Length: 398
Image 1 (cartoon, rainbow, N blue to C red):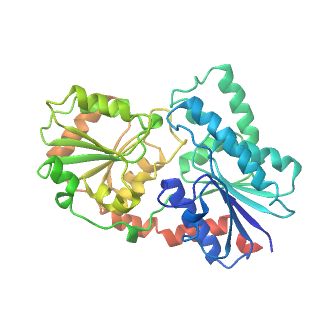
Image 2: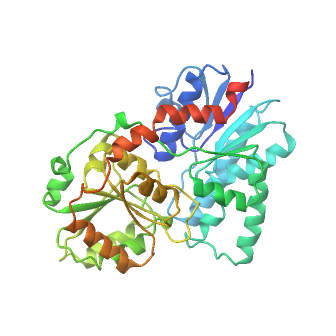
């Protein structure tokens, strides 16, 4: 019976959406009764983890070096040190026939596993949440035609090629990986949310909305990571052009682009149409998700196939329609159109986005929009997709 070794930077549901998905995956592995040898390597304090996982899961944990995630230099150096600590744990757990299941973060961990695979006979199943180095271009960290980008692209094409099997969270992502000449098996498994964990609440019952006195307004909400690849500049430019007096915009979360939102608020205090709230604890996730009429899900221009915002699925669980601002063929945009659970704006023109927002405010919100939560339950059910994940790992055939 083969050993399964799960290696991830995040494994706890309250850490972030990545931790949420890995926690669910690890628990499903433990409950599947396919192997008795499941180990997890992660930079987490043991006292925070024991209460979460099945006793069947062997925990190999270590303390991660602290670094500033919003500083590129600090983040790179911190992840290099973290990857070395990963290596110290991994090297004693690699045996013939081991199956490694890992993700694309942190970046250098993927590099480490690809190098180890040259010297060790193990199977590598890679869950792709981000595609490197392509995602560094829309983030503004690299130019696509630069020498550095071309070198990194060549290196990462070789790294992805080392994986025996890739699991992606969007159809657009599979397209990009095929363009990288990956020729082995790719399985598409979209993100999911356990809808039972998200409480259905009325917007006007939210303490956040009451404090803002926005009960009678139409509230658009951005929830989650406010980062470089979310196209926040574009969204703020559009907000400046919105004319409807009832349109309000609530940002909840943290990230490198928070300053863009805060700067707008400081310079436009008289309009009072944008508010910002820091990251909420996981215990208040339902409160945060319900504090709106419409959920905004964005990706910056050039992000096609490079990421799938998990916030879309959490907002669906809260039964909020989605305004998807991204390439019309991106995974979330396709989902919104296929199931008629919102609107898609792909022009990358602030004026057109502002017009759509004005138009939405003029309509009856429920008109022509299906229940996002019903769609989530039917097509993105946690139990079904987790079972598909287990089968994709080919653990059933051990």
